[in-house]
Length: 481
Image (tube, rainbow, N blue to C red; front, top):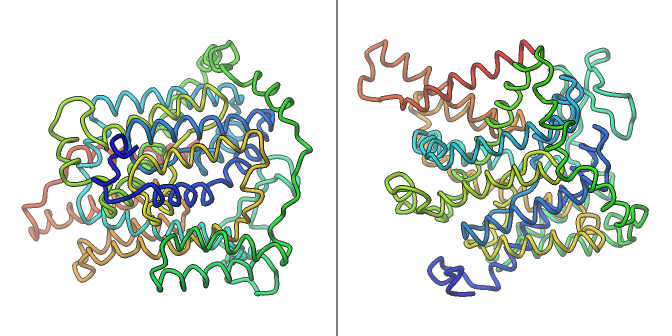
């Protein structure tokens, strides 16, 4: 184990990696319940998506751990599953079989641009200012997810300023509200909110006292405390039998290779352009979510060293950890589509395990094993309340915001793109959208400076220019369609 994962070389040990793997799993295990709840609205069987979610998470995370030897976990991405359901199926009118086919093609495209070094060149084209802003922005994004999961936020909208996507069902309907919505702090009068506050306080105390495994201990402590509070539910939910789930999986596994999938995707000539742009949107979002996660967590923690980045840039083929990590992420998307789920991507919640000390693929292997145990057993996400893991996300967000110190905030040419990157990423609940605004404002600032004669040395990387144009095109097409 030592020689395979190179634990000493990476400054870690088995116990630390196990704790990190547990921490990452508890932070992202909610996906095994949330993903089927979202995708099943398209007509897919809940049990099939439940199993596909677990299988794709296990396979993708094992590839990341055993092949790339990095502490990242993969699972169907939040945001991408909502795009799959509410935009591709409900709004654009594609069937879930066709949507899965798009995801599969997206994975193949990502493999191609990774093998040909296009994806890696994208990373090197991002200036240091934006890299630090992305890292800090992910911190804000993670903390916001934590606050949202903790139930600390309430939202108020004016009458008549919202619309309902899909059938109006309080259990599954999606309400779209315009900018009249106003966030606020909830009253501390529910057990769930109180437990989240307790979890945050416990974690802060443990971190300040430099207790090893503080984040995981905080999660477990909050879970135990939540039992008498009535938040932690220990009763198994056996209303959905595994035999039924596996039977449903037979209806989604490999469906993309049938007439209902790839065979019909481009059959309607009037929807070919829309289908191509949807695949483009899937690929763009998946690529930049992954790149943002790697930049935001890998460089700061030392998982991807300067030597590793140099090897990625200069050596041919797949020759570095970052090369292998990008390949792993790309392959996982296509595998997930074959089983029956939306884009499998590298989870930003992996930052919780990295924050707990995870530095090698052993962390990912532990996380994968725990996902695998969710098949025969009650999903651990139903035992560990979201309020407990929410505290971990909030604290990790605090840690990651330290990257902001590397930005010269007194220089507006750095501050403006950094601000838009970080703030948009958090407020608009999207790593990709934050990167898009960062790219656009950075190019705008550089262009203004050059036209004004203030800076004639800064050069925009061609890939940065192309990516910026693609982001703008994506915004335009989303507005039109």
